[in-house]
Structures are given as structure tokens and as C-alpha cells.
Image (cartoon, rainbow, N blue to C red; front, top):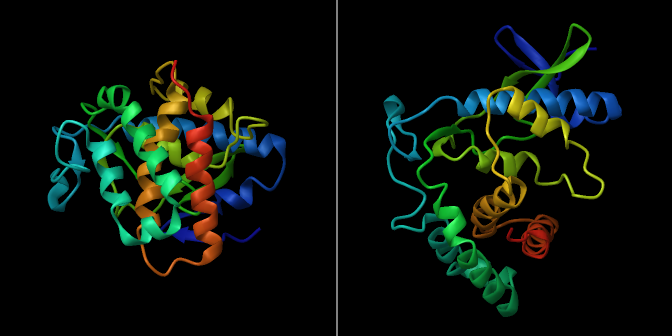
Length: 228
């Protein structure tokens, strides 16, 4: 079958193509995606923050001791966010993210390489020795130094708890690749992914269908994420 995405000497199928093949293909892809993410996260930087020219780390997500809640607060002040989430949803989101501040703060010292858009179509897969494996990870312009759980939250954004598609294969691959997952990693990852969801919700000109999908993801995260 011809390649649907190519780099020099690298070709493969986007994740969404491989994952329409069957249960075995999904399991193999998820496992390799986990291994690859652990390997990405093994690259360390001296400081957390956005990665600039010369691989120097610069500004953090937000200033202060609680960057994630502070960043979400800044999103909530956006006119677009105010228009897309009703008052009750905004109030609930503000309380929700500050309830998580202490647990999120423990992740603030992490300085791993984070892709920040780790999902389809940026992941190319190919069959190698009869198994689906990651061939390339594309588009690194949003990369920063922080917790790998940002990328975990992104790749598992649509992997619902019942029934999950990528789990437990992704987590097994991540650990096999040398990654470590805290006890409540799934909830922490989903909460961290709110930064990406809210960031997009501040952007003007989004199609109504995209807005509805993002709002549903935000609300579902608040409903399904629980403290230990």
C-alpha cells in the first residue's frame, strides 16, 4: 500500500489509518506509541518552559507557582472562552482546576521534552517485522520542556474509560520504554490536557462543530477526573 505521509527516507500511515484496521493493529500501535513517548521524554532540559532557538528553554506556560491553573484562568478571561462556555461551566472549571493545583504543582519540576501535539496525524506508523510501530513523529513547533503527562493526555484524549481502545497497551509500552507513571496518571494527564483544550477555545473563527467537541471534552474531563 502506498505511503500516505512521507519524510526523507521515512514513510508510514497516520495513526487514524492504522487504528481502523482492527484490534491487533490498535494494540500494536498503542504499545509502540507508548514506547516512543517514553523515549521522547527521556530527553531532559535544564529548565521547564518553551523551547526556543538553539534548544534553549524560555518562558514557562504561565508565571507563578501554579502555572497550569494560572494559564486556565487566563483562558477563562478570553472573550471567545466567555462566549463558548456558559457562566456555570466557567465557574466550575475555575474551581476544578484550582482543586487540582497541589497535585499539578508536583509536576512543575519536570523538564522532559514534550511534543505538545502528540497524536494523529503527527504520528506515522509502519509495519516492521509484521508489527505496527512508530516510524516518525512530525511537527515539533510547539515543543516545550515539562511533564510527559501533557503528551499522555493528548494521545489518550479520545480513549474513553469504557471501553478503552489504546489502554492497557499504551501504558505497557510507556513503561517498557523507561517511562514512569504515577498512581493517578490517567486523571493527571486529562487535567493537564485541559491547557490545550482551553487554549484552542480562545481562538476566534472555530467551526461550531469543533467548539462543541472541545466543550464536551472539557466538561467530560471535569466529570470523570477524580482525586485519589
